[in-house]
Length: 318
Figure (cartoon, rainbow, N blue to C red):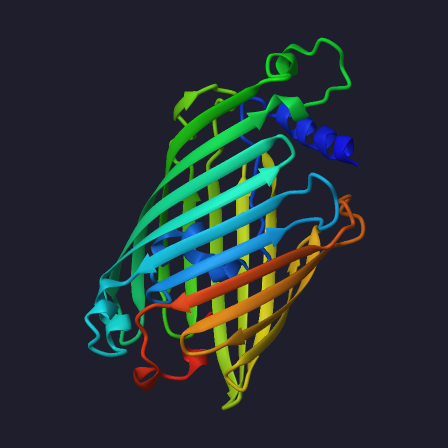
């Protein structure tokens, strides 16, 4: 099984030597808006988040992703009440992501800043920018090739290679209490600033469109829906969506689908100061993915919110 994983990773590695072909999948993508779009930094206020994704659980060498982030809205620190969430003009964030897949180890740090312009009673135009610093390691001891004397691969066999890449992301979003529309572009410099062992010569620009809506059906039931569409030149475009119901202001249940790839079921628990989410993902038939399930665990903690000054929990979470 281990060799099968290595052959898969090597196929991606060799066929796309000059272009870094990678895409991070998250079933609960709506929980990590600032990572995908710097303009949405601080959208839910000052938060600390943690996330673990164990892909193809039980399969040796399967990808694993770890994520932590911190977002700060300075207006909340002043403690002048809930209205500051609407009127605050600036937010900053730090995202740390660690990926391990086959012979590759990828550690990514994204530092983001967002500025908000109030355009309505409860709506904002948000503009954001981020600096993306990646450290990519290649373990040549885990490389296997079916073609003898392949010069592309042989230079890294039985050795280690490391490179760093500095790039930039931009994003914008129109947000309100009950909806958001956003667009972001990643890798604007195409990986042009790099150092170390240059085994990935460039990175493609990635366009990310996201939108979300929520609606209160009854005082005890709210519906949330989200869509994300990604365009990347060296990979097929993907669309994914999820929909969930928040019940009694505490528990949510939901389903999601990454078109042509995977289906997921979600369960979560919300409190005024934190929320916890779990997703169980299975590849769809015909996607040619390894049929093992994927598990995701997410935890968010709201740093400065006070229960006695908040609206309903459902009015504040996405």
